[in-house]
Length: 299
Image: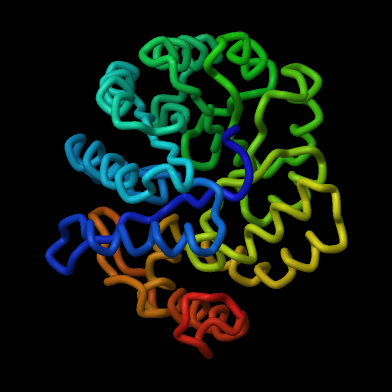
């Protein structure tokens, strides 16, 4: 099952701007040690829109090789062009991944029929499990529960990453799609309540920085242990709030660079955050106790 604490992993680059595969391996090992349930490779946080197709495939391949079956690997395969997403799916499917994360087409603003046709064509390109990904703030379209219900009839569309921030959709999707249809939060600030409402996990940006605590939150929330879940969430709240102060993944990569975990390198049009944003991020890292320890284990 593609459930639990899943990290939307950043893609580290060398100072020259190439993919840093050695550091990628270190990050994967870190997450395995911290108890992360799955690595989401080359999603939005992994800068999928600025990697070449060959790089995209190579990063997924490297992730699978390093993970070596110790943690599940989910690969991003989305695009705003259906044919391009199908091609990516066909190239990635043989690499040994556990499933795909397929973001809604961005910029095109497709109709509900267009969304259905897009996802159904991509699902037909591989028998592997597919997770839909609804993030209206980035795609300008909304994968409404009624469309999800139609797509859920396709056997290998097994769940959704829901990043609208609307926790009420958990119950609606459950009613329309059944209890076994996987629902993952894609919005860290509302993830705790999402899981307490019946969600099955999270695909998290915050988990790049605080994976052990995110795992604790997910486990408690999925067991319905509100007090323990809210306590873990409260410790991460300040990090949730600052990681979207600018477009993801700019803040999380800057934070990781400030912690000494990677080089602060992006692909244009992404670039270094504004000075005011850097100050806010640094203050949040300090308030969370992360700057007081250079270890990779959260305090």
